Structures are given as structure tokens and as C-alpha cells.
Amino acid sequence: MRPFFQHLPEYASEACCLGLFMVSATTFAILLQLPASPLAGWTTYGWVARLPMGLAMGLTAAALIYSPPGRRSGAHMNPAVTLAFLRLGKISAPDALAYVVAQFTGAAAGIALTIPLFRGLAGDPSVNYVATAPGIGGSAAAFAGEAAMSFLLMLTVLLMSNTTRAARFTGLAAATLVAAFIVVEAPLSGMSMNPARSFGSALFAHSAGLWIYFTAPPLGMLSAAEAYRHIVGGGSARCAKLHHPPSTACIFACGYLETP
Image 1 (cartoon, rainbow, N blue to C red):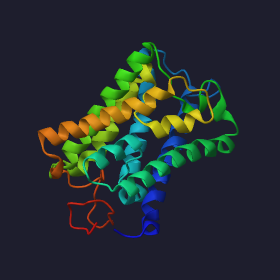
Image 2: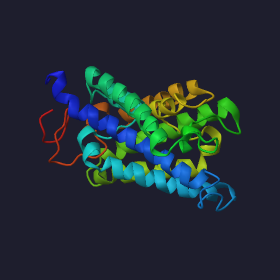
Image 3: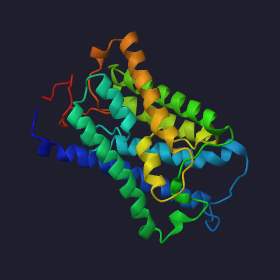
């Protein structure tokens, strides 16, 4: 195991990825939801109105997963993802803790950056710092939706990233699910799947039901890790990276050619 400080580039890359994700989410929320924006209110027909945001955030997720910081850190961008890989033995406990700290820090920093960047528009009620909150079905529906989405996303990541022909498309599959969940599920829970993402917004905006986003996503993703262990075998998981280019350093318990 290398000294802690030698892993700082990975931790910084992880914080950077989630920070940029939050900046992107706020940017598109302002463009698509702020009443003064020329793009706001282009349609009022249910899921169609959420399609532009879904596409924007899906493309953002894909870009970050395949970006240099994403390739360096593995682009977890989510404490629940990190916990699932910890359960599978692909990341050490100290690295997992540092990743979680980086994710919460990156999410908070990303939202904080949008305040001066957009001159307060991020705090407009129509944007509300892209805070997540239970929707039309209340807390029970939000919890169920968050847990189900998290389970499906993590299981997809594990199955694809450990299938030779599909591994390079793992990031695209994950991004597609993010986009689809925003379009379909957002009315139930606000579509978080991520404790750090909801925490970053909640630091600046009232966010009802924060406990849901701290419990349901880890439950769903840890359940997916357990399902993978029983279906395929936990030892078959190659690495904790969503996208694993051969020329990038790896700090995980890696099954590829790099030395962990």
C-alpha cells in the first residue's frame, strides 16, 4: 500500500468530478427552469419537460466518466458506489473513507461555486440549488424509488464492467440510466441516488427528507453488490473503476495489468 499522500491525485480527481457534476446540474437547471430563461417552459407535457435535463445530465455523467479525472479516480462520484466496491473488496477502507470525504467536499464546493458564478441565480426558487426532495408519493415512494434506481445502476455497472466486450461501454450505460431516471423517476424523489449530491444542495437550500438520500442509495447499491456476489462471485469483480483505460494508474485491488 502506497503512502496516503501519494493517493491525493485520485482523491482530488474524485472531488473534481462531483464538483463539476453539480456545476453542470445547476447550469442546466438555470437554463431550463429559471422563468427568465428563454429556454424555460418550452413544454408542459409531463416527462417530455424533463427530457432536456435528463439528456444534459446523462451527457455530463458520460463526459466525466471518460474524462482524465474520471479515468484517474474511477469516477464513482457517489459514496454509495464506493461502499459497494468496498463490500466487494476492490477498494481499501482508508481509500474508501478518503473517497467519501472527497465526494461530499466536491459536491458542496460545486454548489458553492455556482453562487458567485451565476450571481445568485442558483438560489432562485425555481432552481433552489438543485435540491432533492420527496415528490408526489411522499417519503415511502421516494425511498423505494431511490433504492430501486440505485440497485439497478450498480448492478448494471458491475455486470458490464466485468464483461470483456461490454466493459468499455459501462460509462455510457450508467449515463443512459441517469438520463432515463431523471425523465421517469424524478417526480417521485427528485432523482438523487447519491448522498453527497443531495448533501451539497442541502447545505444551501432546504431539502426535505434528507435521510432518504443518505439511506436508500447505499441500501440499493450494497444490495446490488450482494446480488452480484451471489450471481457471479465477488472475486470476479476486476476493479473499482467504471472505465479502465490501460494506460491509467490504479490504486484499487485491480484485476487488470496495472500494479495496485
